[in-house]
Length: 218
Image 1 (cartoon, rainbow, N blue to C red):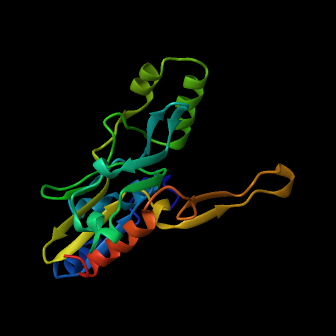
Image 2 (cartoon, helix red, strand yellow; image 1 turned 30 degrees about the vertical axis):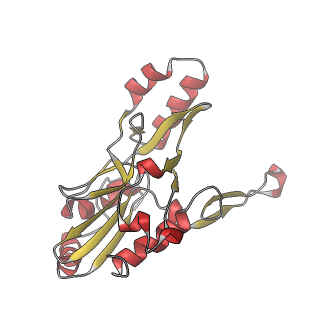
Image 3 (cartoon, rainbow, N blue to C red; image 1 turned 90 degrees about the horizontal axis):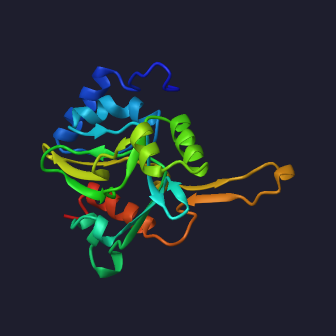
């Protein structure tokens, strides 16, 4: 769906079927990106006790607001997904490439904790207006207070659900290897993001997450 009708991508029966399957011992990886994807997945997430921010997560960097976020080791959980099976599989830094924030149910583990200064706009046009006003010299704090809301505490969650396991991520690009190519007349180099970039341990994070879901990690 394009998000214009603000409805779930999943029927109630589909949501219940997934919940029963996970509760009986299945595993679920739910990655729902920035708006409108959070709206489309919110009902499914809510069935597992997860609240989605449903917007565009950002924080202020030295050169202005950014949606490409870096999470060093202190922002990552003490969890098998981060530790791996041995030190060679440990995750020390994770990057996300635009997404939304999350809040998990009681007892869930925050795999990726959002920064205390992170905020979220409800949609892309609002984020673009925020960027433009800050670029024109308006005080960032005042613009953010008007156009954004504080982010929810996580961009990644892990928890048990009945006999099953669930991972919810508020960003999908970190799981992918993408290249954006531009028309030749623009003279722009291809834009790489996700697993096609350096400076992070996302590939190991993804492997560890799948190992945890498949019970290769405790």
